Image (cartoon, helix red, strand yellow):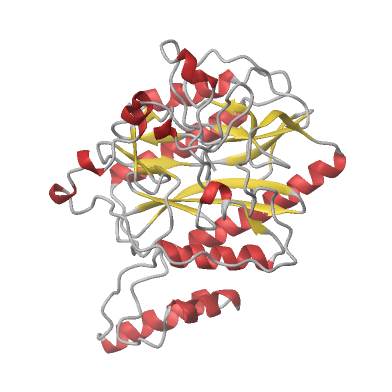
Length: 394
């Protein structure tokens, strides 16, 4: 989840870069930013009118009426519960806001195995969530087949036969009209259930007050979208950002999925964003300067004239959700090198148009100010003697 928050879910955090605003870009981290080596999850708009101008240009500037496809807030359902036996991160139900860890996340053998386990589960949950994006369209005349029934088939491993059955019925009867797609709230419920079924806690839930178990960012949403009642539509793109807390360690990953018949412009953005992440991962190894990540991503995005979002960043991850370093996805001169057995995320966000964000009144949902599409991909990485290991793949 970008610091912050989202997926990746990070509360909008500002660090000591605020004091050096004239020299460097202001960061609202995808992992939390730094504040004299300590960061609190306070809303950025309270810091200064300048921050408000940069980050909180809310719907007053939006022309929703002129573009019916622009996102609008939907209804957010109540927070889901987690069984009491599942281990919770320290920030859950705490009156104190989580702080960013002062140092990098570096692990011994046991820690590495725990990181592999949490990363693998996060990857499996994300893969499952992706299969839900196109579970849609087939159930209109059969109201008893609600999403809960679809979910039951999914958990029994019968999703494909279930869909094929309804497709066959439609072909023979000609009476089944398409329904709207699955809602992001339904994706959240299914993801939540899979995570707790595996004995893990959904890291976003309760992080700085985030009300859901996953981040779902549709179309122009850059990151930290709150799942709600909006159904996915044919032609949408959606980033799903999953973080799980398993045996005391966080695994963090995200991907952008295509919903139905997506146009070539959106497909290209998604493809290039994934390529930029892959290229950045390929240069990782002990001793490599961390700023090479941003240079690599920016170089690739520039070839296609895409923007690279600067307000949200990658971050160290492990026993804590967000730790040093702040991984910038654009060209920069930040100091620091990768360390053996270190874990962190890379999570570039690319846009077709403006890279400036507007934050909705929920203090989480970040959308492009001009309504242009945005895509994101993320992995949790382990620096090894041979280079790098992607922990969040299955």
